[in-house]
Structures are given as C-alpha cells and as structure tokens.
Image 1 (cartoon, rainbow, N blue to C red):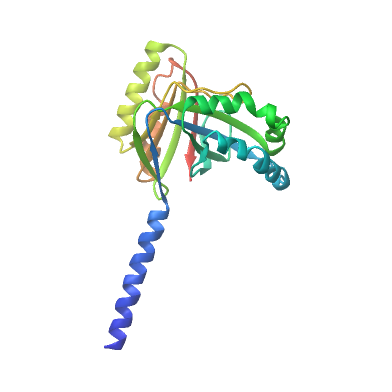
Image 2: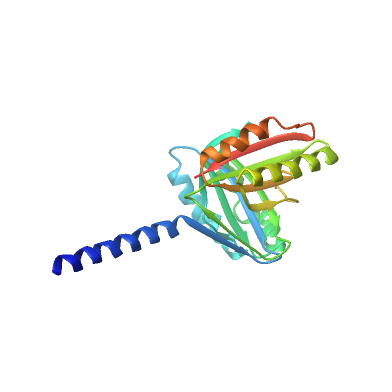
Length: 232
C-alpha cells in the first residue's frame, strides 16, 4: 500500500511538472486599443555586457517613465527568406503613441550617446512600432513551430491578391494566424517597416515546409521584399 501511494504521488508530481513546463512555454500578450506594440529585430555583439549594463541604467529608466513595459521575446532559430539574419525577436509595450514618440524625440536630450550606445551593443537593431486599433489578446506557444513573415508591397493591387492567397494557403495547410499587423512606423536609423507582418503557428516543421514550398511558387510580382524568421 505504501508503495502504491508513492507511485501515485510520483505520477501526479510528474503530470503537474509537465503541465507547468508547458504553460511556461506559452507566452500571453494583451493589448488595449491605443496601446503601442514594439517589435525589434536584434543581433547582439559579443563582449558587450558592460555596454548593456550602462544602457540599462541610462536609457531604461527614461523609457519606464514614458510607460515602456518589456514583454517576452524570442530567439530567431533561422532566417528562411530575406537578407538579414537577426538573432532575437523582441516585443515591448507603451501606453500610447504620445509616450512612444516623446521618448524617441527626447531621449538624446537626457542620454546624449543613446544611439551610439545602441550601435556599440547591437550590430543589427531594427524597430517597428504599431498603434493597436482594437483590444487584442494572443498567445505564442513555444512548443509549436512559429514563423514571423514580413512583406513589403511593390504594387497595391497585386500585393492585395498575393496576401489574400497567402493567408488562405497557410490556413488550408494548417497554419494558425496568431497576429497580423500593418500600418507600422520605424524611427530614422532603425527602419524595418513592412506593409504586412504575420506570425503564424504550425503544429510541426513538416506542416510549415509543405506550405513553404507552395509559397515560394506563388506569383510574387506584387511583392517588393520579404523577411521570414523561425521563432524559438
């Protein structure tokens, strides 16, 4: 009987641990209308720990005063399309557009070497921020295969047809549209402002690869440029 109780306890402990681990890999995000979502693509230089500590002490307090809140980020496992290879996909939040843009406009007056600090720490620093148009909530499950795709348009009519077909094909192949964004802004010096950004979740790499082959074969005449990253 004692052995049976021990085995039962071990079983439930294992189930609970597995459940907690799974939950820790699910990142939840909630935005109210008017809030700002930052998306940063970063590659950090090696040996910049002291530089980052200075940046954290000088720039972050100003950002926090302007309502900035860091959010969970993701490593970039692979670049599947495009000409840049960032290592991190970072998210952040601001209360409103006013605070977001005041920070950009005023930070050099408080931290004169702000942009130099960034160049010293990151070899790639691309930023797009979006004003959220309605209340949204989304989750990114790191146990799944998550893909972030950014498109720039060449021709509006052809691009609209392309993106509509892209979304239809991804859905038919098992992709789940987690987040879809447009009308972003990028500060001078940090440009990465796609006409469409989509985060798609797949049950497996194999499912994505099936779609990926069809995607590459699509008519891209309305597309000016694309970047696509596997998030981890």
